[in-house]
View 1 (spheres, rainbow over the protein chains, first blue to last red):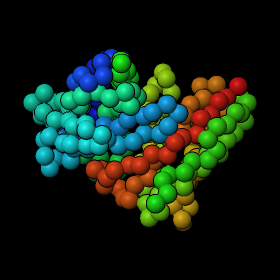
View 2 (view 1 turned 180 degrees about the vertical axis):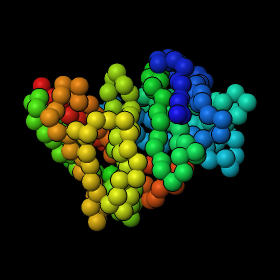
View 3 (view 1 turned 60 degrees about the vertical axis):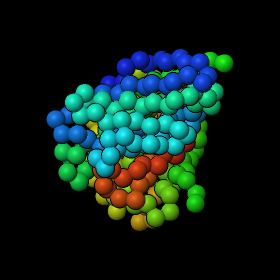
View 4 (view 1 turned 45 degrees about the horizontal axis):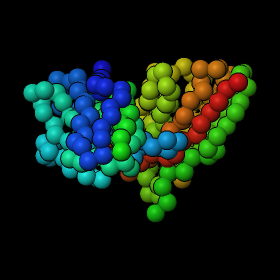
Length: 116
Length: 114
């Protein structure tokens, strides 16, 4: 079964600093990968997705992620943090081996705090 | 274009009761998935419906059930509620069953079982 590991349940950065949120997946076949953001009492919003078209994926709000097959990683970055980036971030995978059925397997989430 | 609408937003139920949650997908979306989010277990897949048929099911007891109507709206039902069923239930819709298809999430229904 697919699994996703997000290293660091809490990450704090200063406003204007680099944001790096880590995600590693377990699969012999590269899955489809997604990053979602969740603000308090809200649903999930898609930031970006990897579908094998390009290893560097650009998303909304200045976020990007790089797929590295050799490291089974899909880390999320943003060059300069903004106060509005404070939220919980989830990495998710969709297993290509499941044929026509699809389900997202989520990591445990990383709470990002942005310090003034 | 309206987003995914979940009703109600908040719900308080007593142990042993049953509850029905509703999800209206984005217009034109035919796939609806349900997820349970708790502090302890995180986000867990419940089931997915496409064209009124359950296509995929997560590892939840039979007390959790769902259905999808011809207009793609979906409901999930939890019978004989337990305290551990307290969670945020999220519904997501997408255009189809493709595994790289983007899932759009609603704001969720916060269920509290007392």
